[in-house]
Length: 338
Ligand code: UFG
Image (cartoon, rainbow, N blue to C red; front, side, top):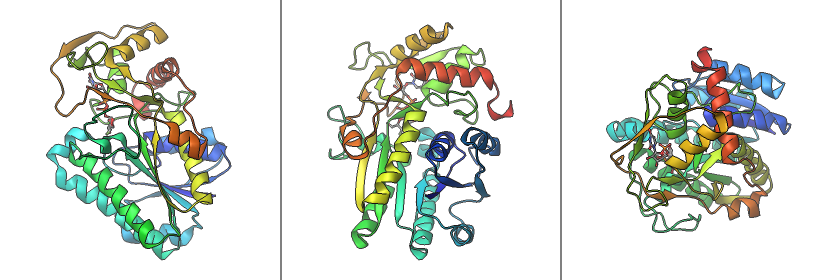
């Protein structure tokens, strides 16, 4: 298939492009590079062994999107593009709602005009809000999100669900990601956040590399086995493969499906620190600090539906995730700048 990936130069997008190409698909990328680098796509081409057609444009730009759909026979879209920093979204809600919703509406209107009716969307476990129980299943009621970023994911799920209700020929797969970490085994592509990382694994790799002094562990009084927050960490290559399977599913079925992509295993912050030190033979100095507002005790998936519908299951373990994250850091101490 010819698959358009919006935000295809980003962390999850770049890894997915490689897996799509390995599965025989042709990839077209649209990215505005606000939080990604063109160099990532150059490396995607190297790893995928074929060229990637790319457009530097904002998905909110209707004319640019019209041109992309006119110039290419697109069979399906994977919609990664969007602003994604939880804390930033609290301070800049309008920017988050405008960008994430506008881009989705523009994309879907363009798809509709061109009769492209298959879309896989990057949703997030954040839509579950504060869970009453874990593991989280797709049919559980979402009681409400804790930040504007989460609400944009929630609203986009509703928008895409509404499109299917109005036109049952559409095929929509809403992938709810848990916590993607790690990097491609080659060390050529990986996570490259702007500035000081917000998320745990990129912070740990920068501490281990001596670029940051120590990790702050946000609270050790949660109701978990060691008091630190528990999450479902998933290797980004496993996550990427889930998108390939979701595209295959979307090509065979119509309707709207919500699917968790997680491992089903919860690890605490200290589990991650210990696993990282053991896998890589490096120290990660840390101090325990206050809780971070909005964080929940534990969040992990029931991944059964992904296996039943897509035949997908995470294959990489925590050691793989820690080793690959560190390889990316050591081979690219300044990210894509070398
Ligand atoms: N943590 C620390 N110190 C840090 C960073 C994180 O202790 O410097 C802890 C957090 O408190 C949490 C865990 O590490 O317990 C994971 O935190 P992350 O920021 O890496 O990830 P979150 O689970 O908070 O959020 C992630 C994504 C969101 C997404 C959410 C879905 O970043 O985009 O998962 O559940 F919405």
